[in-house]
Amino acid sequence: MGPLQIKELLQQTPDGQSVTLKGWVRTKRESKNAIFIALNDGSTIHNIQAVAAPGQFSAELLLTVTTGSCLKITGQLVASQGSGQAVEVKIDDIFVYGTADVDSYPLQPKRHSLEFLREIAHLRPRTNTFSAILRIRHALAFAVHKYYNDRGFFYLHTPIITASDAEGAGEMFRVTTLDLEKLPRTDEGAINFKEDFFGREANLTVSGQLEGELGAMALSKIYTFGPTFRAENSNTTRHLAEFWMIEPEMAFFELEDNMDLAEDFIKTVITYALENCKDDLAFLENRLAEEDKNKPQNERSIPLLEKLNFVVENAFERLTYTEAIDILLKSKPHKEKKFQYPVGWGIDLSSEHERYLVEKHFKKPVILTNYPREIKSFYMKLDDDGKTVRAMDVLFPGIGEIIGGSQREDNYEKLLERVHEVGIDPETIWWYLETRKFGTAPHSGFGLGFERLVLFVTGMGNIRDVIPFPRYPKSAEF
Image (cartoon, rainbow, N blue to C red; front, side, top):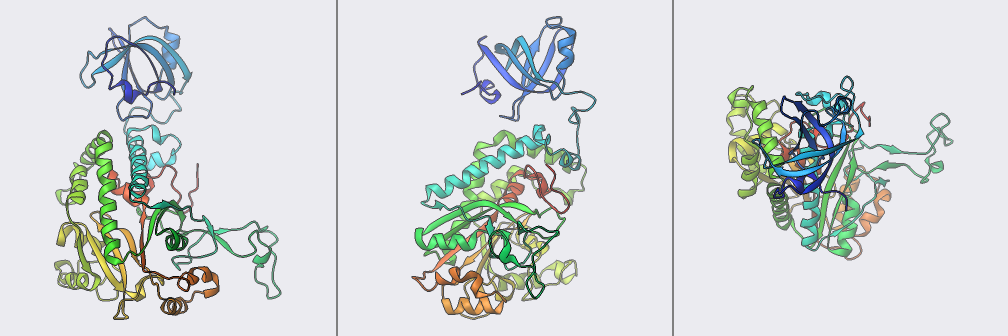
């Protein structure tokens, strides 16, 4: 199974046993008494120190051992003489797999800005910050699959190329094999998509939800976890053009069941990260504290571990949209006109309103329900008042909405009416409508943008820093 990784070596009891290390040089330091090489292979935030005697290796070889170079070191695992680590390796032999030129390797041992690191996304996983983020991202993805598997859900692979727009937003990436220089035209002059690969217009999916519902109407409980795409020209710290979505859909779940699942799910996966990513989270917490030192007191963030435990340990506050609007209307920022966006029944709450409810008013995560039908998607179940729908959004500190979901409309006539209302051609989703004709059942589901979760758990400020190769307007490098 390959050599032992540095994470495993650091946990061994040293008794001079022979070991082999493979990894990349973080730093090399030479003193009168020894040469110290810090090696990292990505398995842990911690480097392992390898020590050689002066004159043990030729100057020519040591010139190739620089930050970024890749080595195989054989030696003996011994108790460390220095502080900060329990073990180190007394070097017997060094083999250089690949050199890294000091003048051109951009990751020299100094502080780099996150903006600069985005420009070298092919190398940034080698930094402490990004290796920690990627390990946490992995742990969270594993926790997601474990959570649903342990509760009898089936993982459904919904299509990435689709002809439906689940959100009705229209901001979709088109998929085509047509020659853009010689587009086929109909007699009316429109593009003739019948000559395209699928014989119709096709796009990259914005959500696996609609197809997920089809699975739930046969398997009872399913979840999707896959890439989704939004072609909105948004250059914010919270939006990506390509991101990953987790979308459970459950037959026989009503709104209350949906809220219970969402709360339990998010608490469980965050708990998994707290238990399994201690070193990486401690590193990111310290990094955040260092950044906050330069900010005024009122702009400093809650310490990372405190914030994560705060979510795990508190029951989420549940209230209706209407109750939330009343709270906002009575709030100090509204009365003093401090909110950037106006407050009133019928508005789509902005991030500042959501964060006020979570951070200032309730001081805990919030689940808002029963939103006005006009600001929510066509597939949400109408309440008896005809004005609101059985929607639910989970709001988090520092981030606003992290989960959006609802009980789905299971009545064929009501759903068809809503489809016409929002201007969707029923022919394009005939298959979706048919599930309401053949053995319809109450069902619910929600969506969680995976990167929003990783952003929250890592404490990072920009969503472009929690996915290996971010896609956003004018950027599809790497």
